[in-house]
Every structure is written in structure tokens, then in C-alpha cells.
Length: 83
Image (cartoon, rainbow, N blue to C red):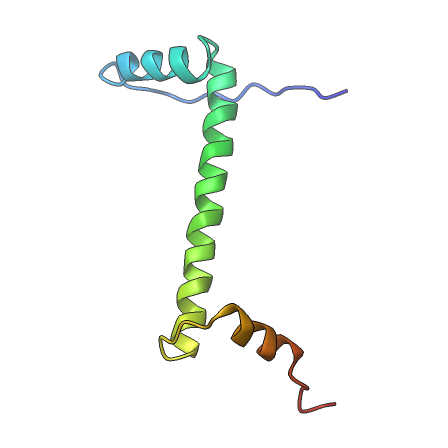
């Protein structure tokens, strides 16, 4: 059985209408559900950012060259120096 833990955070009065709006829409009026939805969404965005970073590093290592699927498979199947 999972147990929940209360976590507090403060929102200024100028943000309260915006918070209420997104809680109503994304959390169906439930702040806890909204926070769960928001955390999952931002985790997904974080993964996308990391993937873009890895992709940029790989392109830089290849001098900007974009490889085709057959070229990728050829690299994967190529014998290594230790073989």
C-alpha cells in the first residue's frame, strides 16, 4: 500500500488565479492530482531535453553528418578493435 506525504509550497496571490485555472483543467479541481500530472509532464520534458543533448553530442562527434539507418546498422555490426 502506498502512502502519501504532504508537501507544502507557497504561491503568491498574483499566481493564485492561474494555479486555480490549471488545477481545474489538468487536475480536475484536485491540487494533488494536478501536481502529479505536472511532475510527470516535466519529467517527460527533462527526458526529451537529455535526448536532444545526447543527439547533439553524437552529431558533433560525427562532424554534423546525419547517418542513414543502414549506416547505423553497419556501425553497430562492425567488428571492434578487440575482436
